[in-house]
Image 1: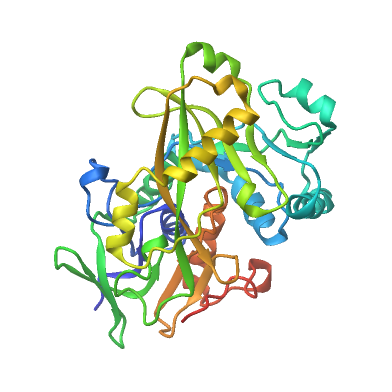
Image 2: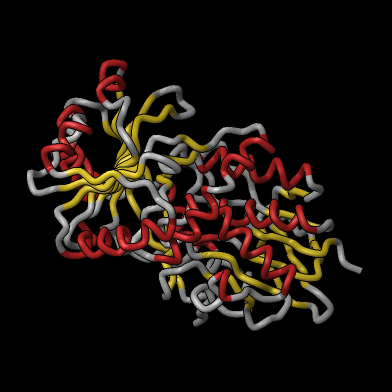
Length: 395
């Protein structure tokens, strides 16, 4: 006799979505994961990178798999908001800007080739038009713009997770606010051991533990995935600056190589009551191998050199930010060998894995979670659900 049919381990963006979709289809679902720590600097357990107020969402993408994952997820935002009563999506639009060369140029070419198939509305701006349309930016003269005005902008990841969990609980899922330390196949099912020593059993378990998935005894063997630290800078905006940037879209400034790409979120009010404009990049590649290393990183404010780079880049692109108070923070990106999420079974036919956001998955988390639910309910994914692309790789 088991406690549950299905246990989802990890109550972040993917896990919460999986619990919602599973509980819509069956009873006997549990979601196990800790709540956000009240005191980040003194918390010594696991973290989640969804502890934030804004993540870019858009359908425009140079990769067809990620584009479709985003499209499916975005199409359900309104339903999730209506069923939960929690707003998390803000349609600010999303702007891509670049000179059309190198890596960034290839990305835009692929994305533009797919826009009609995906049904995306795109506005294209030359350099002169770009400055007129988005006066808060001072982009280089050789930069063009590709703007997605509808079904794009940003999501509040905290609120999205809250909405997913609220619906899942309404549908009968049980939320268990504990941290999983060990998972093992008993032969007749799966046992999950939590940090307080409590044990929970299920027919099947799917593990959505993000960057921490390899840092405890959760899987029969580790997934081939790097947990890498990323730094974010925040510009605090007073009322005057808020007006300057009020009409700003979510923005990705492309470059000829990955290290120079930056993403920028428009002004967002944070829990401390202040309004911040956030900028981040893709240049850090340091791996976090252990729980201790990950905790130390989350306790930090990021890397000083990366903060300096982001601040310099932000003021170059948006001179109106000069003089703003700057703070910084840290998060973790989970980068898989394939560049796609891992959604599949481990060496155990009772333990599946759902991880690998690759720094672009917040917008697509509902569909990724749905695929995790389909995997448990049907036993496999089909090609229309990217079975050939999302298979996990183990080490």
